[in-house]
Length: 322
Length: 258
Ligand SMILES: Cc1cc2nc3c(=O)[nH]c(=O)nc-3n(C[C@H](O)[C@H](O)[C@H](O)COP(=O)(O)OP(=O)(O)OC[C@H]3O[C@@H](n4cnc5c(N)ncnc54)[C@H](O)[C@@H]3O)c2cc1C
Ligand SMILES: Nc1ncnc2c1ncn2[C@@H]1O[C@H](COP(=O)(O)O)[C@@H](O)[C@H]1O
Image (cartoon, rainbow over the protein chains, first blue to last red):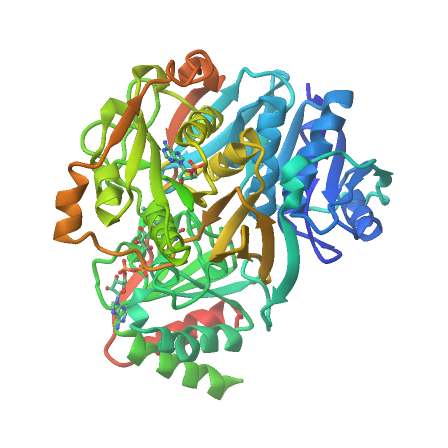
């Protein structure tokens, strides 16, 4: 027995729905007979087509104005939930998803189940899985707070599969007073130029850690190799905290989860908090000068060596082949 | 300017974690200042400095009247702290924690800005600050990698997938800061000595009027199963003798990446 209605908080970059949203929609189809999406933004028609394809019958649209979408959306979702009583509302564990689920949990007085990687319906109730201690221990959590359950899922927990559905019916919601939450205004957007695929979508990810030695080494070693392999580049938290690269590149427990065909770790020790973000990659190659580094415990190919010797030679060899 | 900083005190992350009989994280023994919150403490001190005066108040919810993490932050330069410690809080979830911290902000009084980290190092639900903002009817400016305050307004650079957004609001607000937003100072010897005598206002859930909304009952969720995750097998490991890169080239060819 499945649930009646599950809602998915849909996010988009411009008019492209995020992969994390499509993954959750795919999962939601197996949980409930009716899947609907909620979206705060200005690309309703494009979003309706994509969420429809992945199984949503209706797209409820909230106008966030120039406010932060997740925070403005919470008020609209709360009003709609009071009218229609969905069984669960699922969010991505993302920047806006976290804003929305946090404010909504207060409005509805419901707990939040966060960092989920598994979701099922067993005997008509929702079963939620998360992982602790760097992904080494899995826990099942049940909530007794009543519907709607508020759930946040880590990206890459499910595969996104199209259901071939038609565009969702757009239901434009009237303005809801979001109170002071709406006062935070987005004045400007800066898009850092991105060449190549995104971290979460790339087939190949090359990440650098403290072992690369300096901020200056990131471009010639990590970025260069990633580009040659038509992949994306990432980082350990150590070099994000050190200010060498932006937070958006962080892979791990408090950063992104990636699951590429190939993950290459350069000068990364392999702390559990890093492993949790990449150990489900199909193939892992590691270069580290310490033969005892834990990263070798998950690597399919481990090279015990200096990144400053191995990587430049590798780059030359790959260039010579292409 | 009066800045309140949320300071979580956590078990040393270097020590492997364990679950207690109730399947919650063991939080016994000495706790330390969550490194993620040291950025908020530093940011607060710098903002108060730039404003030409004011005060930094720390708020923390922790078991067993733990203050070591708070003392570290007081030694950095915060003026005082509110500590909520009460056996009734055991098992509190993110919403329960946010309720407690929101009451602390009200207790601190006359607050212009509340700072927190984007997520804690041990729980990392990453929702407490937004929940707290909603309870306090404040905007929440999240994922700040740069913060400026001027003329009663705050402007941040908010991390996004593609770059960053410039977000502005009038005070008071809740702001979450990412690691690296500022470089946390090391407490000086003088700071450490002074911290010993700084006031810590110790309160209970009942003092805050929250006795029945926190702890196990308030959380309304239960852990129904705990299992070990399947481990990944290690593959081939070789010592680089100058030709290690060729092994990688071979692997890349096998995967048809090149
Ligand atoms: C709550 C919490 C959350 C966290 N979240 C994350 C997260 O999301 N992502 C994350 O990555 N970390 C996270 N961390 C941090 C994590 O514990 C590690 O500190 C971090 O991953 C270490 O990064 P690193 O491997 O780059 O640095 P280090 O651990 O310092 O390792 C550097 C490695 O480089 C090697 N090396 C040095 N020189 C060379 C050379 N010339 N050639 C080759 N190898 C060399 C060394 O042998 C070493 O193994 C978190 C920590 C906590 C407590
Ligand atoms: N018990 C606590 N005491 C003080 N601050 C906290 C506590 N729990 C959470 N916070 C703050 O809220 C942030 C996010 O926490 P979390 O939602 O648990 O990831 C933390 O980084 C702290 O700044």
